[in-house]
Length: 239
Image (tube, rainbow, N blue to C red; front, side, top):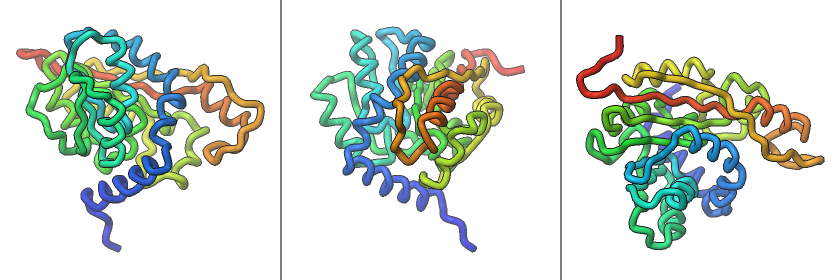
């Protein structure tokens, strides 16, 4: 059997997320992930002058959230879905700090050392080649810059494993495996933690992602996986 190429997988993802955009599902990402995103931003302690890249930005909700908190800076989003990027540009409302591009994690259209921070929420497990994506992230980071990946679909939370049959091709990796990919990309001071989601659980769950409200509650109690690491400063290297 011939396996699909990376380009074919990216086209499949583009089709899938263009469909999500047409269904209005991009707009729901902010409400669904706001609590864990705020927890990540608190740990990042962004400064107003920083340049931030969001890989898998969807409709750009995270960058708009950051823009509300920063007086300046450059905020750039990329996504495989051209429909999501069109929505992100429209929602930006002409804010000159915000720019959006159609691109994939494995081929970021930016020069080396372009950003102080790179973030990604609920995107990394879709990348056909996560190792290549992290190498690209390390490339576009400035020395001492940091990468932050936040995901809900990972092996250490058993209450999300059933998503695999509902999603496009994905990677179900453990926290330690993600951390190893960060290190292999040349990032250092790599750390990971699980961030419980305090979003209230409804009494009755009728969606397709969880068996029932009890499983949803258990999933949120374990929480999302946050992995982050730094690019070495000039003149330093990993031991």
